[in-house]
Image (cartoon, one colour):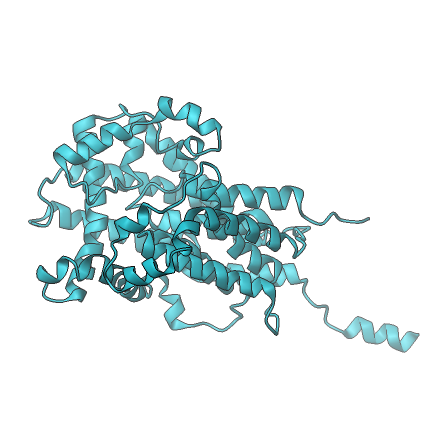
Length: 424
């Protein structure tokens, strides 16, 4: 007895698993942190795009962007960055009782996502020859878009895929040998997302699944070893993004039209991608120049409410300003490049009060990254789901969109009502 007791006293105590996870998150890659992502990637990109728009460029016919708009947009991003860093502790706060989610929840979330895809792509999938015809260049994307299924409140369940990915890595925290049905679910959803991106021209859908996969893998499976390529983060992703864009556009627009305009497909891809971001900032500035500051309905801030099942149909007429923006594109811009950026839309809705929206965005990412570091169930998964919206803030107003409503709603239901109860 005494020998056993003495031995136990000299044995080093193992750190709790939650503490190990928290330390791993604290020592994670810089790009996992919204503050550093803004400081080292998004803001430098914003400065480069601003310099291009303020210089002597000829790709955009109507330039509305000026030094004043560059200042306003930069201030918006700075507010997001500063608020996202407020109150951050030097060491992560470990969750006292991390949520224990039964693995069967993954069946439920997969079922939701699959139902959404059946509704959205059911008609296309029953015509496989049309899909083959599309990839051979004989069917246009517009023919397939006519077959896209839309049922309010149900077709958007495809976005439950964005909840499934982080939940899978949160529930199955360590690699499992053998092939499980949950791995099969990941493959099925991945294939459906890829198919959706090609036949319905929704590249964002792939990004919304790929980035959370990388984030959650590095968070729970990455281990202590460091990779220089992974450390580059979004900089390293530029090459694969160009490659994916080429593959996505090859049959859609390159062979049909742009092959006669550009010398090669790489010049086409790089210029086209750059235009998506620069025209978005210019469209945002043009919206303010033509339509005015604080004159629009809160369509972008409450997009999630507009797309809320049933209720959204009643409230949409009171919040919708899309007709005004479409008129701006048709009369003063280019309807083909129709992104308004995720910055200036809030000045259009709220005027300078948009800086409070920026502060709210910063607070959300402050909470999500704190949860990411500590292993808090909901916020950890929400951080992975929301990450794309921050990364794409220069191009699209996605943070308050209906695309985020479904994954965040699913995550809330799972962690609020479907977790295992602690037994005293």
